[in-house]
Length: 160
Image 1 (cartoon, rainbow, N blue to C red):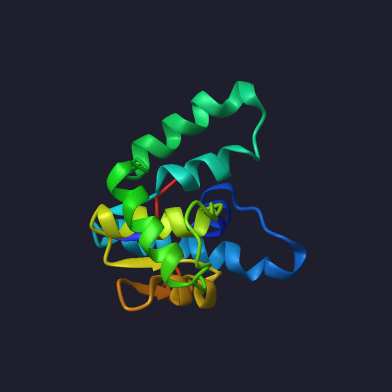
Image 2: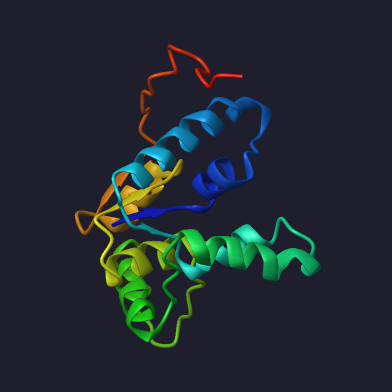
């Protein structure tokens, strides 16, 4: 099972990017089509869902959630994920030497923990360097692979 991050979801589903990332839209859409052809299950952690929905007006959230639910596995960020996120976060933090120091979790840590706890084999993200640093050797992290697709060489052969 492949876990995708928010940037991958936006490029692949919405077809939206910053001007300097436009090439990622087609690349991500080809990759998602390949995953579908391969019957690969694609995970979108609930934290990613929250980030994704921020780009829509409130009255569109239910429709967008329906689209995501129909096409992806949407696991929750639960207590087990929170425990792993705390481990991942503390592994990357210097010791404060005092009890009661509270660290705010970045959503990246929550996404990684959710992917690991719910059985993903890989996380695909544009933030691969940061994700690799946080995840260590616990899960494979990669950029969106460039998938080649054969275009239709014959064109539309439907008789008129």
